[in-house]
Image 1 (tube, rainbow, N blue to C red):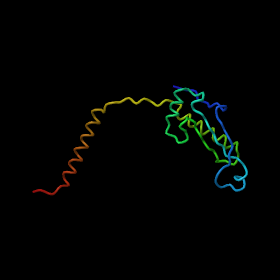
Image 2 (image 1 turned 180 degrees about the vertical axis):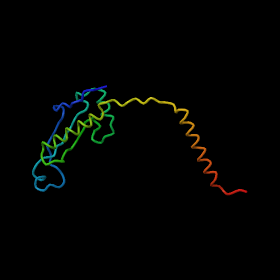
Image 3 (image 1 turned 45 degrees about the horizontal axis):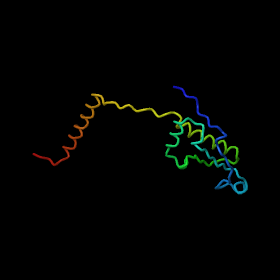
Image 4 (image 1 turned 90 degrees about the vertical axis):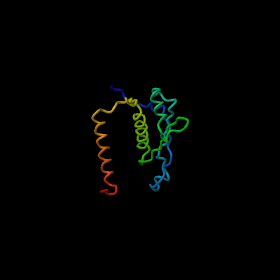
Length: 135
């Protein structure tokens, strides 16, 4: 079953430029090249089931208010960091876009039961031989 990809509306994403941390010398100290992305899941135009799965993720980047917060500072330019942040957000949304498959419980086959019991009896025999030797 094919589903069209869920595209994130750029108008729903709040992006602000901040100064990056770490090494980089004068460029880091003067230029706000890092990007801080905020995406309100509740207010988004995503389908309800996708929103539900997104909020159910055990991800520290999702706040209790349901806002996905991301910081991108890998690249030297703001444009590249912005693209990186949007790509990472899209990847998270894509990971929950498809509903998980429902697992149907099955019974073990006759052969698998026999193999299990055979293995148990062999193990039992090995362990019984470890005891003290009797005449």
